Image 1 (spheres, rainbow, N blue to C red):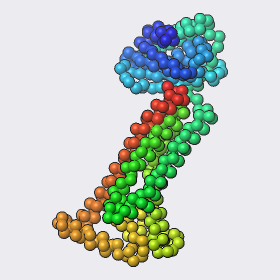
Image 2: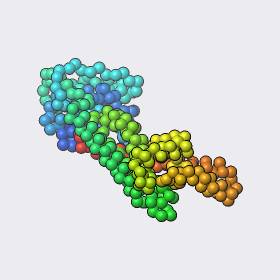
Image 3: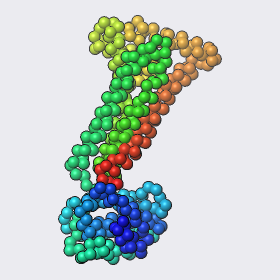
Image 4: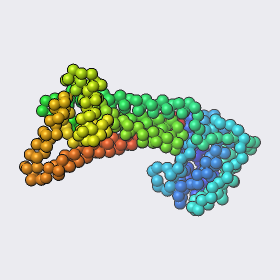
Amino acid sequence: MAIARLMNQSLEPAGVQVRTDLVQDCLTVMAAGELGPPDQDFLVDFVRRGMLGLAAPVVRRVVVQGYAPGAAAPSWQMGIDLQDTGTIAPRPLVTNSANSANRSRRAGGANSGQLSGQLSGRSVVHTVAATDATLSTPRVVGWVSILALAIGATAAARWAIAWLGETNIYEVAYVGHFLRSLEILELLNLLVFAVLGMGAGIAAGVLPPPRGQQLTALVLAVAVPGLFAIAPAVRQQAWINRAADHQRITPEQAKIQVERFLSKQVGQSGLWGFYTYSARYPELPLAPDAMREIPTIDRQVKATLANLLRWQTKSIEQLLEGCTWGVRGFYLLLAVLTTLTHFQQGLRYGWRWFGWR
């Protein structure tokens, strides 16, 4: 590409090699230094001046990437929007102790002018501004819309899977309680979090890097635990509904019974009380009599296991509860890793589609 040849001629004294890639109206400049990543301020200012001097209508955005020698991923990246205009003074370069930066600064003034002259074939009468990262209103609206869609779809899928388990799969005779104790349907939710990560990555690609990644990561840090909590909330509500149907009372009355039962058994009510109770007991009683019998039945089962294994009953309780919390932690870790992995994939698509790479 002619632009790459001209840049390499100008940057050779600075020890910088350049490759370029033009996709639609976005030019990506990939620069590698001999001793380290090129100085960011120098190179961005150099490319900005040259492209504005060229005034090529086909190029509307430029992404400048700095690479260390032999590196596969850029050490830094900066976007330039060539459509924003205005007169500005040249930007001062930031002092850097690296050898490559020193060489870049020494070659800076002459090389920037040289590239501008070579590309345009005439003197540059004025300097046109280009912002490094444009947070325009359409981009912000697009980011919010895509991210909201991804989170909303994930929440709906989480609710549907949990409701399916509570109303059908976990009600199967003999094996239902065992499947509920393993929370086996959480494995299916890995697909859901994969969709969340992909959608969030695409949303992050709408905004200029690195702001897109930073803002989206903050949202995900709040959203993922909240989305993970949907399943126990659905299970608790399904329990209340079954108790109401079983006793032929209103859901409000059944909820009062359940809350009192949870407070007595684990010392807490609400969602956290249910989450703690379900880690200790797989059985969800539907009537007051069954609720009163649960502690006795539980002690008998654990005493039998203790006699068989010749362990103390307290050790059996800690082992069973610890296993349940371990399974839940494992599922949460898988959800986070799945989200992060697919976030990176979605981010690459977003950068490509929205002009940052």
